[in-house]
Image (cartoon, rainbow, N blue to C red; front, side):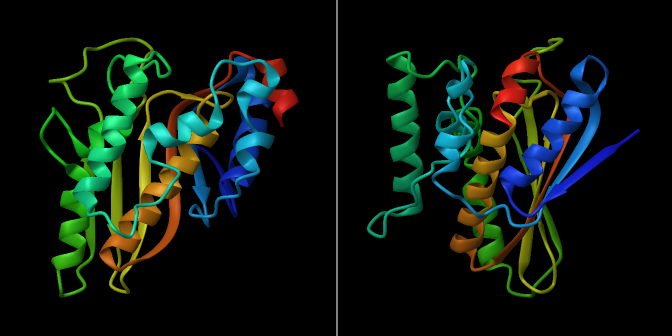
Length: 231
């Protein structure tokens, strides 16, 4: 059975999903589909007001968001390749300094250097920018791969793939599938990062961003009291 929640922005949708998780048996929901109508909205106050660290958990909201996609936009003076390289280098430095615990890599890294070489994000932007006949399109970027990731019961990477959908009106929306989704530590940061990703793809390809749909195959929390406090 599929459960659905919706919200006008990332915080409203996350709150609805978190409330559902808290009310579920064992605080686990199978196949939770979250729709965010305006995913590109970002209020800097959210990074403080809804930070899991503020209730004693381990993950910082801003870090979860920018590991998926940077919170700061591309500089006017830099190319996309320079932008990709700058942020991948920053993430690599933070891993070496142990400020970032991600032994398998980062979502941004897998989008732009999949297997060390393939820039899936650039391929999507390029395709959307050069297809002149306004085609309907469904473009996929993989995060997980049998070549990179072993089978495991629970563990990262949780995001499996994203899909960019374009209609004939030059509008695009984003779909994301997570195998496992912690609604205290990760979900809101993921929604914010995905919104930033959608905004980037739209601005770089001349499209209009619309909604975000996220399928959390297993939505859960193991820190019930802290999630309630954060809400």
